[in-house]
Image (cartoon, rainbow over all chains, first blue to last red; front, side, top):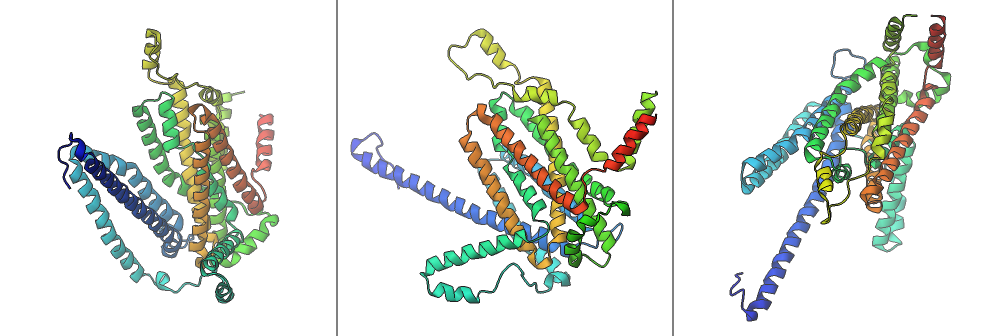
Length: 298
Length: 179
């Protein structure tokens, strides 16, 4: 579609239609990109959850074995790689955009993303094929039987039935979540997502508005990221140090929780208890460290 | 009394009894006076065409004072250490204490709650969008972290029966008095 005689009044309507069409195309393309971004984000979350919560515990060695690749070390190493990538990826992208032209930068992003899609499943398949634990069929305990639901759906309008089934499934899942012994620590961790006191967009915007220069904020963010990476060294050390307690410290009042976890622990119960104790004590000091520092910063 | 030797023995006692984190907490709370200053620091006035030369000179200064910036960024950065250490601890507790077949569904529900609270943060920021209202966003954020700490402390209390070794603290105080 060509634009001719832009100054001619008779062609004004043609020009308007062209602009509208072009604008609409841009909006459609943008909407498609947003949609694909949503799918990518959901897939990314699913992939991360599968790796962190399903694969890593299956592949880690028991906590009792010294100098082995235990769950604590495996988690810390994975988080370290993740945080380092989050620190350097924006810098690398900025450097590439600065050094090369825009089409080359876009091409680089596209090629690196496609390479990730090709390489990651192959590596994941290689790990899966070498682990009998990963290949074992899993029995999901969160999903209840669907016999009553199909009958229920047949008597209702189909869409309404699906919605009802979905809501009931969510309710069951929430009930199962709150029936575990660790729902309180889990919920306390998720609550931290409410806090705006981090180097995220909201806080950075306020800092800029308060008169801090972009250079100062960038330096502070970089130092903050380095401290975040250091937590992957500090946390395993803290867990290991705080795991060892005297026998006299074990209180009979907590036997209910210990008994409820008994079936989940390995044969070496004492070692597992020490491990959980180390996690609980380290978690307590970590969250209070965060709280006290935020009191100072606020 | 030799305060130097006493201080050294106190540090040794703390390290020997694995009280590293509380020691850090006590040190971290010292500059709270600076923090109050940081809260009450007013943002610079908006640019106007009627600016005097003095206004322009004041605006050309490199933002808030250096002590405020140092306190703010230092403690905010250290708080990230607490956050990610806590994240690793809770993640591992989930991995150890949730049965294998329930791991993915449990993590999914946990992520849903995290997204919900994140959405809550965006709603809060949208409601209190003015820069001078950010103090309230900070206060509510701090309240959320305090609630989170209280929840985890409650769970820890149920699990272990205590939060602090008061008997050891008592022994420390009595030992200190004898010296």
